[in-house]
Length: 189
Length: 189
DNA sequence: GTCTATACTTCGATAGAC
DNA sequence: GTCTATCGAAGTATAGAC
Image (cartoon, rainbow over all chains, first blue to last red; front, side, top):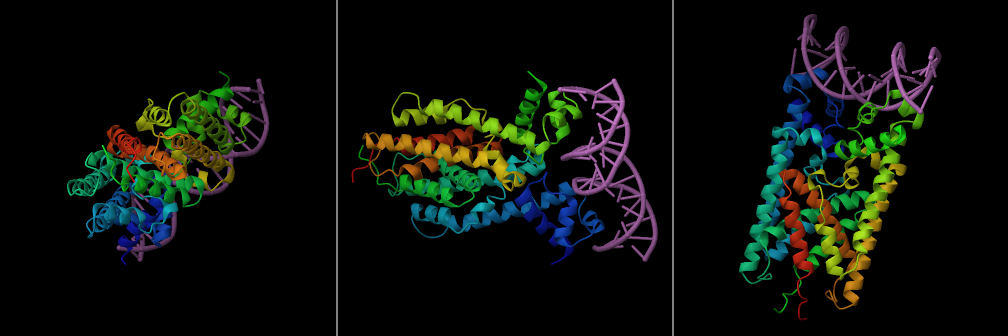
């Protein structure tokens, strides 16, 4: 892996763990095994390196989610697989954590991938839900946009609860709770 | 308000906005209109001041939530009021945001109020849900612990989505989504 | 491309006068 | 209790040799 690659990968790891304010150029350099000069040769500064890291992380997250949500199966099966997939719950979401970084959110360029990622995920989930509803699998009264927002929120919030508790259990419970309501047989109206 | 009080209140505001790593003693002093010496007279250091601030914030959050969840009404009404209460959504949750602060979570003393707050909230919501279920208001098959975890997660995740989007809409949608599923008439089994 | 040296600022705290 | 002075370390870069 090139020095430039190692710098981006190190930035990704440290941004995930410590956020933007909590990650110094020096820490990235040490993690990457690169010198001061190398970093400033390849990137204009901390901001540009972080931007490359954030963009790559966003791209990966989207590719992974899309693969799972586009896999064969009913809407409920696909969403269940997505929610129940193996995750390092305690680490949380590498994109979601950036929303707590004022310096990232205050910078339109750094913020853009964060905004785009959630926008895309919300839309993609709503599509899956709408399909399930239209095919008679899910409750005909289900609101795809609202339900999709709720599902993404459960994921992001599940991470918060798991980190607060120091264990994965609250995350698993929240996922169980949402799936129980979602896949519950339709009510007789 | 005493200097000591102003320091704690300033620390609360800045911790909420910028987190622990993002908040310097100097910033707190300036926000409070206090000098270097004053702060170190009243508190041993940044950590001790942050601890006082976090404890107070946790206490307030709990008091507010308890008042709303203990108000009269059915379980669904109380939970709806809690979720729909007026909030500064873009600011997010002052306790939830601390879970993204590695230095807070790595310190058992700073972390304790965070852990306790979510633990309490989860339990309190589960009680309300169990009551609603036992009184025939909610689905008899409802799992109070899992559903409570889901509701807290929707709240915390809703903040994340709203911050990412730069508007409150995703938060409102997520809340709408969860209430729609929760208050849906029970299925015929 | 990578290294070392240097620079200026902020962080987090201590010392000691008033 | 509050103020100013001072401190060593870290943050974020720039300069220039190799």
